Structure formats: structure tokens, C-alpha cells
Image (cartoon, rainbow, N blue to C red):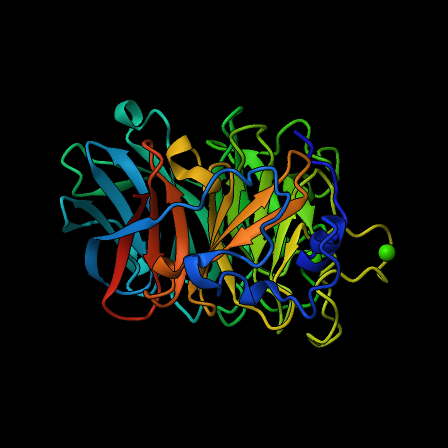
Length: 400
Ligand SMILES: [Ca+2]
Ligand SMILES: [Ca+2]
């Protein structure tokens, strides 16, 4: 699937397009402050008849520290990672049990630790799942994607193999890392951080500041990758480049398109529509000068603008999932995006060409501090991890 590249549909541009005229300084950050949790722009949206649902937010499990990701493994059980503790857990009925695995090998520093999770759709049979984490290897360290097998009693995970290694690291800043299994192929997408090194995002032989597309078991490049014939084996893995710090990846069920979510510098968090070989325009060099635009059109070649941007300041958008199910009302088909610094969740409606139409920031999700990841459960409910550093929780969000 190749999402069409859109321009930069700011909320203001949408307002103008809808004939609402100038609303003054409309910042997406401020959206949803109106009573009822609505963004200020409501007229003429295609979903105008659907009302935004009231949300029910329950705690699934507490007592966590910076849980990074959560994924269901069937039987009412969840796998949860905690970044700084490098702890992997299975949660069932509110009870958490630690899963043994070589956690001492996980390299934890700053924003890097045990991070993203993906679970084999055939987990019942294979018991396999993927993680992305900092790793100590041979006196060095990197960020890598690893494939694991959970034991029958769910108490231990054994390494099947490291699938992708050599994602660059420096201090631990901008360590990414998000994994997403493609719904229609054997591809695994890997969203990476630039390791706060200006040379990485647009160096096609570096795995930093990229979205990679690899075979989910072997880690090899897939046919159809834009640089599949490159001399450098790392470049063959690259799907898109010019990213700052990819924190979220989500695949739209209706058309298979994949979006990334990433942290802006001091401004312009981004949601980006990925298409093979696209350059998302981040190059803060030399010396990691972050005053440059998040999408710097002055760079050589064509840079692809975000389909949603926070404007100034950032709210540190992180994980995301597409919302599905008619019981979600106006939120059905939106992209739910968690924000760390902004301490909220956004519901973004895009049209079929991924042009922004409307956004909501419901009050029910503004009371839980920093939000990290969003996972859609088979029944359509959303799981959300908090990231406040202590007494963190996994929340379950459903429409009332
Ligand atoms: Ca960009
Ligand atoms: Ca250019």
C-alpha cells in the first residue's frame, strides 16, 4: 500500500477548507479543551452525525515503572515490558508475573531499555513474540530486535534469534524503538531513533532515524524495499528515512497503510504516512543543531511533510493505534495517539487519502499523566500504558 503523500493539513488549513474562515491561532495542542471534549472544529466533517463517545477508563494492572508496551497473547493474558527495569511480565486478571529472560543483557540508559513488543498472530501455536531493546554485546551495545519463545507455563522466554542488530546508540537518547507486524505479509516494520546523532537519519547505511522493513523471522530485506539492490546490506532494510525518533507505528485496517508517530524537537511532533523510499526531512547537523525544521525542505531531493503536526510546542506524541468498531461512534476509524509530555490522547480523523479532518482530546484521558503506548484489543477496546516513572499502570479504554 502506498499512501498518497499529503501536504501539511494543519487544523487551521482544515478550518479554512471547511469554510470556517480564520479561527485565530488554532493550535492542535489546545484542541479538545471545549466542554464535552470536542475539538473546536466540528462543522461539515463527514462524521458530523456521529457523536464522540464517553469513555470508560479502567486500570488493568498497576505498580509498574515506565511500562513501554503491552500486547495481548490470548486467554485474557497480556505481555508487558518495563523500560528501565528491563522487566518482561505476563498479566492476567490484574496479577503480574515476571517472565525470566536474559534481562542482564538489556542495556538501559535514558530513553533506551526494554521497549516495544509484537506478538505472532499464530502465538497460540508458536508462542513467539518480538521485542526491541538496548543490548550489551561483545563489549559494545546497540538497539536490536529479537525473536523469543514463551515457555508453556509463561514463566520463561528463550531467545530464538536476534532479527535485526546494529541500531546505533550514543547516550541512550533517541533510542526509538517500535516494532509492527505487517498484516498482509511476512514483513516486520521497525521504527528507530536517530541516537541523537545528526549523521544518522539521512545516512542510508545507518539503521538510525529510519523505518526498516524486514522479514519477521530472518531479518533480511524484503523484495519491494526501495533500496533492495543497494550494495550496503543495511541500506537494503531501509523503508523510509529522515526520522528523528520514531515512537509509534500503526497500520490502518481499512487499507493497510502504515503511519509513524515521532517526537518533534521543541516543536512539530509528527504523524507521517509512510511510502517506500520517502525522506521525512530530519537532519539536525552539524553538531545536532535542533533549530532546523522537523521537515527541512531545503535538503536535497523531495521531503515528505507530516500528515499531522503538533505545532509549537511539542506534546511528545508516542504510540498509536487505529480505532475500530461502530460502538466508538465518531472515533471509529480514527488514529488514537498517546502523548507523553502532553499527558493526553488524541483521536485524529483522516480521510481515505490520509488528510487530517478533525481531532479530539477527551478529558477522560487527561487525568493519568504521561501516556506511552496504545494497543487495540481484538474486541476493539484500547490498552494504554502510563509513563510517569512510578506506580504506572496499564489502562483499558472503552466507549461507554
Ligand atoms: Ca519530518
Ligand atoms: Ca528539498
